[in-house]
Length: 298
Image 1 (cartoon, rainbow, N blue to C red):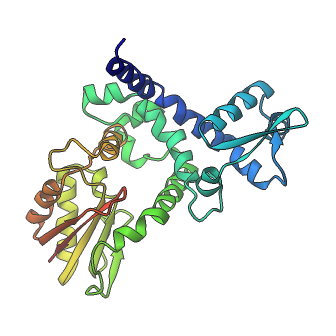
Image 2 (image 1 turned 30 degrees about the horizontal axis):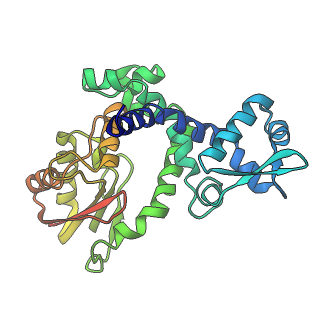
Image 3 (image 1 turned 90 degrees about the vertical axis):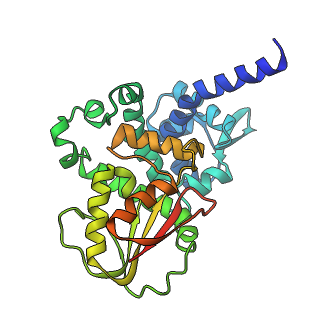
């Protein structure tokens, strides 16, 4: 087998095993491995971790060693036994209380998004989300029961805050927002509830949930409520002009397919949504992070 074929096979295995890596990360978060090791006064062996978590000795040892290989944990030998501690990566991003923790979003991904992604082929075949099928919710009740429980809703909201702590500053710095004295970060039932008057409305990770028709309806409502000279700031992950990248945004768009009725969009597609609502001077800015910014004026 030539080197080019070797590289292709390596990539194929990496892609095929990607779900296993995700599940190791999700399971370790779910079980509380990183929390336990963060609170311990010293590194712990697998028996101590197993005992404190109430998990099986064999499964715990396998999980811990895999986390070491993934650079989530570090291991050393003391008294003839392997002992484990968090790496800097885990301490920074996987432990509750860290200012950069992504734990809640990972828990939501493992408990909810991953289950929907098991139905990706059906989503592509049918062209619609798989949330009802994944969780046994009647299709007609989907948007009144998008969260299976209050705990899931809160987990999702906490997960969004995780992401916002890392991405928010660069997004809000994309444009000079000082001309807008009164800013409204829109949430709630914005399709029906009265909208407060504001100079600038922020739609953060909102439009990607919905069809073009619903986005147009919402933007028309915002235009009517917006003060003259005001505008709207759309915060989303932008696709490239040809719609074939970046990879993360394409994966997010598939996530919208399996969980909602929306999609990620290109700058041109956002302009096509904003213009009919009356917004002008549409500017799109890449931030270099996961989320980008689109500013349009009334």
